[in-house]
Amino acid sequence: MGCAFFWAHPDGEIFGPILAVFVYPEQRYREVLELIDTTTPYGLTGAIFAREKAAIEESLRVLRHAAGNIYINDKSTGAVVAQQPFGGSRISGTNDKPGGPHYLLRWTSPQAIKETHVALGDWQYPCMQ
Image (cartoon, rainbow, N blue to C red):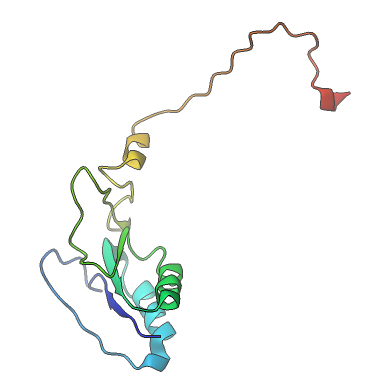
């Protein structure tokens, strides 16, 4: 499987237009995925470039926790404010995805309320009989 990856730098996060290229032998593809997943404690953004659907699916499976945002066959600097949630993984942030619906839940305290409009005939549930 042929695939190209762009991921965070192992010594920390770099915010800027940097392109890192690592040419690897095709037979080491799975080893490279593990290397990407375990090299750094950071995980803001990653990009996967591949033509084979199987390569994309395996990359997503292995790199599931490696970045808060993963782009497939697209530039990794394209989060659109107020349209695409953005947040990191690991120590790159809380992964709350600011700008998205999940971020709102961080500031709420859900409460469930049930109201019955028919008087109870018995205090037991049918399964208790």
